[in-house]
Image 1 (cartoon, rainbow, N blue to C red):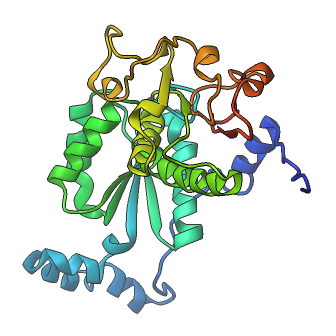
Image 2 (cartoon, rainbow, N blue to C red):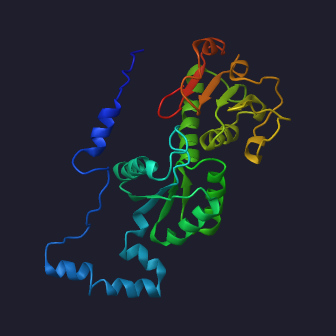
Length: 295
């Protein structure tokens, strides 16, 4: 099999990219011609009064006369940026702008990034609820667990537009698809494989849940957090981690990975050694997904 060359980018190159021409990655342009006095009068006063009246009579008319139906809010509080941790709302802006660009590039959906400077889940929920009328969908991003679960669940309950937490569901969808294909290539049965999930954040939880729904037995998945293997009887587990606790004598990654068929890394770089890989089963499947640097 021909090896694929891995591209590498320096910090300087990335910074220059973000600072070239206009700073950042997104801008707003008009979808209507703005070349004459008449165009301006229709776009703003007095012409804009007509759609205002229509929307006041029928809120659903906003989908006909505004960008609402094709506009997504990409939202973060910066509490779990990539794999770098809590660096604050403003520091998350390059990532959110990047996600907005992906929406436009691959689906022609317009998106605006909104960074909420708060670590209070209820405050974040209230903020999103109050400006949600302007959008056709909400994309949550880089919000630390367990707040991300609480925020998404509540927003789905109170809003009438789609709410999607990309770190959970986007990661779970592509990883599960990759697992299904890898199992087909390696001729392994999804009901008989053993999986080690290194990480216990939002993406790890969602991937594990989808793996189980896809046929992997609960007892065949070992999840590991900063303190080690999540096992039944371990103290101070929250409700989300408790759902993935299993009966096992393993306490470390090195112990848990012996004989495993699949390694899913969603934690930090450098944790997976050659010795650990050699201790796995024949033809192991490895998803080194730590971001920005893999395991």
